[in-house]
Image 1: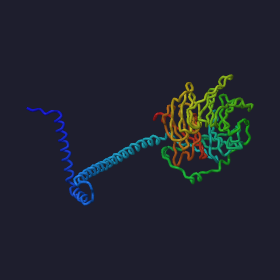
Image 2: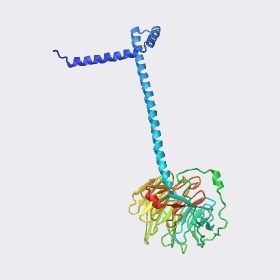
Image 3: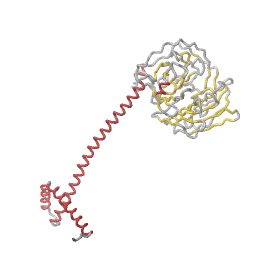
Image 4: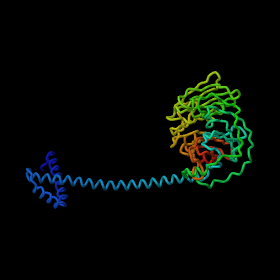
Length: 449
């Protein structure tokens, strides 16, 4: 039996392929014979120096090319339609999933983990800072751009005392004032149950008309003083922050003149001028149990000043942010927490400050933060009117209520914890001219983490 060689077999297969391809073209062409014949007649009627057979072959080839493009066009249309259906399906699934997530958040906040308890209204301009006294009686203090500082009863929201000794916006007159007060705390009133009010996650913007309707003239029956017990004068710029060094005999102030000053309270004398920042200072904070000071600045750094050894006053510079460091605060342990306009908050270990042990990324600039003493919960006040709570590892715990009935209506400037108070354990203030006292159910908050 004769055996076919390899080369002849390959030639035969190639010939069969060309034949089958020719047949497929003929079948395709059979559907458009009328159009091809019409085109061929038109070509034959035109003047050309090309032979008729060559012109016919060219026409057939161009027709085949045209049909290939038509097939590709149809396939693209079908593919586009399928992609559109898939995209719509993905959108529907994504919307349903996110709705479930949002619903779960609302279910959590509806349990009244974070409640607005009391509003402290009386300032005529934005409130820059607030703090709670560290000894009894515990009162709330606020400093405003209306040139005044106020003391408030935490339980009743009543203004106890108004200080009007500054000539500028709070301390815009480049001085820091120390003044003494004697206040009579009013009888606490029952706290209204607001657990059924608007949930935490309902965000409704306030119009200018709403804010105008809420304007007040300030407490008329609040006693006032205008003379300071001690005036500290050494700064050449606005004094933006102040804090007591442990022991209560010295105070540190931060200024826009790029320096922080350490004063002796009894003599009003300047003990140390802490210089080195390249731009204006934004905040200063002292350690609760040690002679340590941390200062933050617009130069994107914060500095740690050590006064534990009287003969050595060391300083360490930390460059962990890319924008203004708005505040840096100590915790009871060995941590420093810094917040910045770069929309991040970073947690640092005092024993190893080379890199942060946790980084919190947010959607808005962060202002003066605070950390609770016992549970170390970080309260983040934002430019976008929100206040968020995080733990030290960077896990988000909650967002405070902000709706058409409660919450801040403008930028939130500062936060301050007071865990010893059973009524309000967190306070915030902002450019909406009010301070707010919140009740945070910390055990439930940590349980839901």
